[in-house]
Image (cartoon, rainbow, N blue to C red):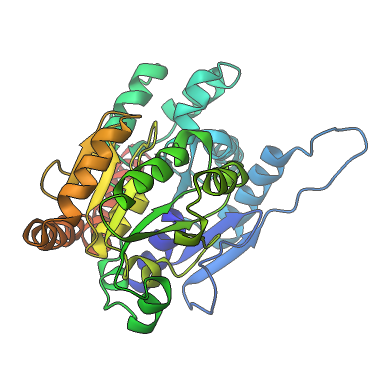
Length: 364
């Protein structure tokens, strides 16, 4: 998603952007004069159990580099894109084109791969061969240095949010449907994987509901969803909990929320928490990974140790039962989100592009 929004923002500033991927990004709908989409075609052979996607991706990269005169490749996620880009660059060099590669690390490519040493040599090599490496948080940068032998600087360029998109007035009829009697609305959004600890969200809600009339909205889908739905039935809270599934228009849902809960075991950044903050929603989260870099303790919300449901519940009640504190945290959340606004972050990427291209010209 970051790559798509970054590409669109760069295109609006006059750059020509080529997306090379196996499937058109969801948020890349509509016509953009400066945006070009190239689908990676992966042929299947009876010889292989798994189609050789990385080879097909490298070939597609070479084709776009040579035919569209690209200046640089910006790849997102170390696996498999950085290694595919390395191969594409070597082939382009044989044809007289020196194209630098920038690799942006997002999280799972490092935290999961860091535990699976099968890929480690390739990932380490391809990152070190990149002209520049960026990470979306300081925590992810540190995790990368801890897990891989990286011989170069990793620049931290934070994930971003389009504040204009998320800072919108709530749709009153929508809120009335969810909370007809003025109940508080708690929200959680994720891919419902075990690392998100979604059951903790439910237990926090159960504790809060004993004191404050409230509703809970779950946004997203994934492997843990059926387990959480079953827990709702066991706890007898189904009437007050809604599962909205995957949603593209997150801004409309977050606009009616009073509190956002993200108790993850690990987040390299926690973009969804930032989107909540841009919607003026205080955040209750764990203190794992990069979350303390965006959710400021006692300012935009509260942080708790992973799994400490009692502390999260107490913090949630502190916010929901104190109108003055709630209003202050709403304003603080929006103010802090503005620091990560897309208009502040995109120029950092542009500066990096200029710097890398300058070095290529200087060395050639």
